[in-house]
Length: 292
Image 1: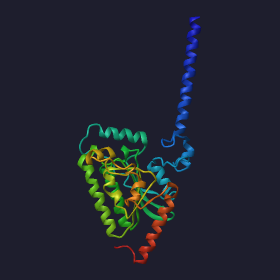
Image 2: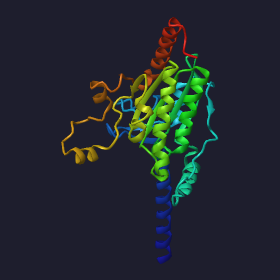
Image 3: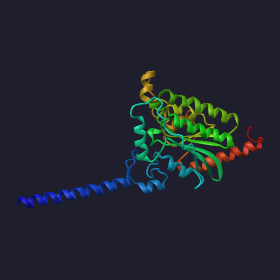
Image 4: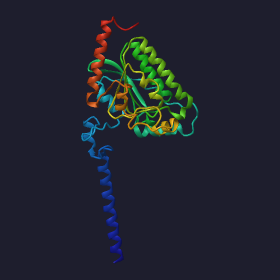
C-alpha cells in the first residue's frame, strides 16, 4: 500500500511538471498589454508593428525590428560596428555585465547605425535600443552617433535618429557626460552644411540624450504616449517644490506646448519620413544644393 501511494505521488509530480512546462511554452508565445490588460499573441503583435490592436499602445522595439520596419529591405549597411564598450573608470563588474548582456540579447551596443534607403531615398539611420542597458549613452554610443553624423556630412545625406534612452551611463562617469557635448557639436556641423536632421523620440527618451542630440532635430517627431523628459517627475517635484501637471512628460503634452513637431503612429512612420526627406530634397535643389 505504501508503495502504491509513493507511485501515485510520483505520477502526480510528473503530471504537474509536464503542465508547468506546457504553461511556460504558452507564456512564451503571449504578452500582456500593460495599458488595456489584453492578452496578445506575440506573432500577431509583431505583424501589427508591435502596436496593441486593442488600445493602440506602442510597445518598445529592438533596434533590429525598428530597422526592419523603416529601412527598405536589404538596403541597411551598418557602420561603427567595431566601436564597442570600454571601461574607462575600471568600474567593478561593468564589463562582466556588458558581456552577459551581449550573450543574452545578441546586441553589442545601445545604438545601431548605418546607411540605408527609405522608399528609395538614401539616408543615414541611427536606432537606439533600450534592451541594452536601457539605451544608456556611454563612450561607444556617443562615438557611433558622432560617426553617423560625420558620415551624413561626408556623403551629404539626411540623418534620422530614433531615440530611446535612460540617460547617461553612470559606469563611465564624466566620459559618458562628455558625449552630450560631442554629439551636439557634431549636429551643429551638420546644420552648417544645410543637411536635414530628423529626431524621432520613442518611449522612453530621458536624461542626457534628451538634453543633447535628441532635442536638436530640424524636425522632431514622437510616437504616441512616449515618455520624454530629462529628470523623473519625482525628482523635479522635490526640486521645485510644486505639483506637476498630469502627463507633462508625454509626447502629447510636449506637442501641445511646442517642444515637438508631430506625433506619428508607427504604421505611418516610414511614409512620413519619406515625405519629409522628399520635401527637403526639393527645397534644397531649388535653393541651389547643400553647402560644400
